[in-house]
Length: 392
Image (cartoon, rainbow, N blue to C red; front, side, top):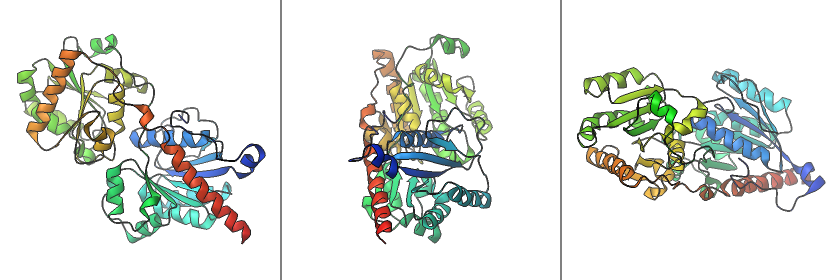
């Protein structure tokens, strides 16, 4: 992943000088290796890329959430056992910082961890790097959180939208707040509809709409309900359409009841959680991806869908704009405008039927170099601070 993100060695340092100056990073994150969801994927990509840098000695990862299993870790990465609970995590962060000193950079993977991350970085004399994802940054948090973020040498945001919302309530030099968007696994590529999924879900001869996300009652902003409510109208034009929902959560029963109430239970198919190795095929079995969200920080699923070569529809009120490059790579709609949404769905299904185009419209090279530039920034900040400390 380091190569995919354009990571390179440090400027002007080679050999023994590089080894002597290499930095140790303590990453305080919600979850990473062995975790699920877009945030865990983002953390894995970022940490793997950092560890691949010549100027990074190693990355020590302390996760909040327990993982079901942890795959083999990249070279240079050590993940500590997860510690849940605010007090327990705070104590573990302080203990880990002391055990693995010297620490040069403290990476804070979520804003709710900012106070403990700021304390650890201050005690260690380390640079603080804070990550911003989505809704957690859109409204003003406590004074303690604001002061902690303002201590950061670097803040990275997955989208321009989240960056703008953060700068609305945090007094920090905007030049220290950078955009570092999601990337996407190379497994997601265009291809024919896989026969085994056509058989499993009885999809032969069907037009398939797909949404991939958690079905959490706290994340109803993703827009499953909006799509389900429009299905009766979609079916009048495209009677062979199926809405395939990938993901699970505590809101599933409500959505199932809504589909039954609207008479489309036979058209809305809940696949639940799917195997990671099958997820690329689920995108390829679809004709169009739709997620009319109003609260998305970015939406890695948009990238996965675009990389798979299918039509993509997202909302225009949140970080989805960044993922779809302001509509250049997909269709942006007002998620609460039923006419816009249904027109986009019908157009996407018609386009797939007429052209069969499954080219990869997502250009990975757009993201190449982002992380390298930002890492050079934190490198320069850290080396300069260390040099100043030695002079004192």
